[in-house]
Image (cartoon, rainbow, N blue to C red; front, side, top):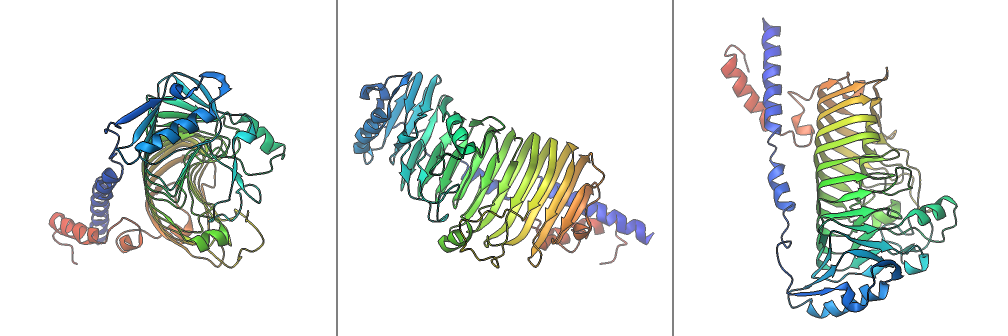
Amino acid sequence: MVNFVCICFQLVYLLLVLAFFSHITWAVKGNSLCKQTGMGEIRPHSVTITEFGAVGDGVTLNTKAFQNAIFYLNSFADKGGAKLFVPAGRWLTGSFDLISHLTLWLDKDAIILGSMNSDDWPVVDPLPSYGRGRELPGGRHRSLIYGRNLTDVIITGDNGTIDGQGSVWWNWFRSKTLNYTRPHLVELMNSTGVVISNLTFLNSPFWTIHPVYCSHVIVQDVTILAPLDSPNTDGIDPDSSDDVCIEDCYISTGDDLISIKSGWDEYGISFARPSRNIIIRRLTGHNQNGSGIAIGSEMSGGVSEVYAENIYFFNSSTGIILKTARGRGGYVRNIYISNVTLVGVDTAIFFNSNFSQHPDEFYDPNSLPVIERITFKDVIGDNIKVAGLLKGIEGDSFRHICLLNITLDVTTKSPWNCSNIQGYSSLVSPEICEPLKESIYPKHYSDCYLLPNHLRSSARHLAKETFPDIRS
């Protein structure tokens, strides 16, 4: 009888937990963070790119036209801002700068094409949190659409297209003939109030959308495509940025669909700007060589308060991955990932601690990352090869890793491989690995991110009403 009552108490407890988390309170914050505050406003001044001599034939180089149009619109920055309209056509251009209080608007049949001449992508200094170009020492090519120290920037339209024509860059990368790191398609740096929406991005030379050192960034309703074998064509990479919302996106690329970063080894540690308060929801996509959502491997400035929900990945290498290494330092903490569906994914959850690329020989191999309070909840998967490869670093602390209500149809005989980690689990199938077998309930809610302690008392109260003979 005692065992029966205990089992019933545990069932009631779990049902209460699952019901509670279907209405998790951070969603209120997410709604506020993801609300666009400037999209409905009409800019009082507007020009069309053709007014500055641009020709949309896909052959004429229009870099000067974009630069001159934006230079002209800068005079309206303190008068309510301005809009640059790009009509239907194929508008070839090199890199150009944006300004504050600007809307770049692409018509439905407008295509901005990146030049295939590397001279049209100027070389700029490396990011201070990286210390060098990500691929090569020294500088890096500037992104096609670039801005720094800006406020109130909107890149949007009626589902127009920005095509980086990255194949030439991928070939240079593969043949090792590059002198500098490849450019991104869009990079905003040290900016606030950024909205990117209702566009299609194609064939980025390197990472596609890269907000770095930014605050209050919204990326909504975008499609990002690149060949599945294209190298390092990440979709959206928030980097040392805070208050970022990514939602309602479809991404299919050659690497991570989303990768959250914050600097590289000693440079990221010194720069010390974390990525935090990041919301990802209603994301769909696939890849062959990367992951759906990645944290790292450049995470030396720290990553925290990441919330991802309503995620669907299919025919992909990895679902969710944490990438780090000795020498990275920094931290990853307070991560909550829920309502994930995986179909045809090789590895559902992966902690990879062997990303051994370093910017130079001056990194400190004794600088270890702090990994703690990471929660996975409500994950289902079909045709999964490996449920989890969860590998920490010997002598380090990967702790309070929590898995709740995970059901994966796994095709291999060894679904979990865990080492140098510590945590808890409940309702996980197939059976979880030994370091995570201890149950979340009733003692470890406070150790798991967003599994609040007060649920224990609520569950006890409900259990007492249901089973009045239970003793406290």
